[in-house]
Amino acid sequence: MHSFAARVVRWQRRHGRHDLPWQARDPYRVWLSEIMLQQTRVETVIPYFERFLGRFPNPASLARAPVGEVLRLWSGLGYYARARNLHAAARQIMKEHGGRLPERIEALDALPGIGRSTAGAIAALAFGKPAPMLDANARRVLERCFGVRDEKALWRLAEDLVPGRSAAAYTQGLMDLGAMVCTPAGPACAQCPVSGECRAHRKGVIAKTKRRGSALPVRNCTWMVLVHRGRVLLERRPPRGIWGGLWTFPEADSGKVAGDAGRLGCSVAKQTRLAPFEHGFTHLRLCVQPILCQVTDKPSTVGKRGWRWFRLDTAQSAALPAPARKLLETIFIGPRRPAPAGASAGTGATLPDARCSRPSRATAA
Image (cartoon, rainbow, N blue to C red; front, side):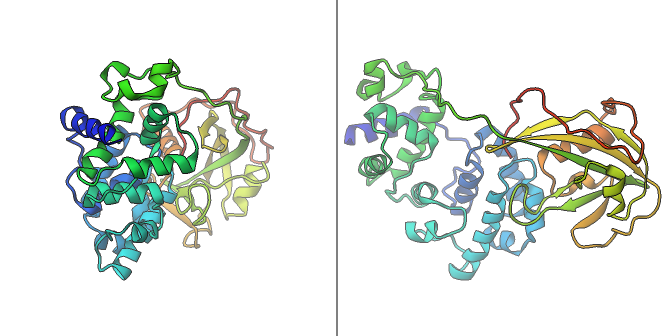
């Protein structure tokens, strides 16, 4: 085990990643990066990390901000519960820890959005503590090398392997090894510093095992893109659930856009059905039929809680989920308007379900 840790540390110092923007032993940067990197690739995180850090350079600035502003900076990164938990944790840090990220594993684990593995990674990378962690990359390396798959046994192994010294280099090395060499498919075993000790490599069972899962359920919905005098109506979703706290388009519950828009105080003069699209989550596929609606009179929904009319040229600065932002870009900002999926519907027309013909490879949000 000592040999394994030593090999990982040596490899990381020679071949690992050393230029990531959060590798400064700054606890706040490490914490922020670990939350952003949950189920998200490094190259995707970097621009979000830099923008977020520019706006919220420390826990105090993050805690003072309204959660809507935090979600706005997070918009497009997905898994928005991470942003809400980050904001709640910042406030807890200000209240209970004097504005400084705690060093103890137990205190880190008690913060919203931080579990056992994330707490261990922060403790090792930010404070140099010999704390175990099991992110997806580290788990894959240990499972292959030692042939251990049982959860409790993996955690015992992780605890035994982490060195008393060089804990930060070792932890970063495990992450880098899994991301750069011991990849899920097509690992570069010839470049691996522990391939000689790897059971999966010796047995020739290194290939990725695909897990068969049941097909994701499909949810069909209709988005009303209500436009009135250069403004578009958006609805703030409840704090919990899909896209909690973000602004999205109102949905037509009954399938009759004119009637559903009328309940919002909008009188629709013209409807144009746009091409449907799909967005993938980890637990379902969302099939959306957008309907562009020209509103004639001044709606009574202005100023009501949970509803807001955004100027078309500034709507994208709101906290929007990725598909809503892309739809706005396509309709109002892109060089070409989307071709309607069919003829304009009458104001009382009943809309069919937006069915998805095949699964897409949309990223989860």
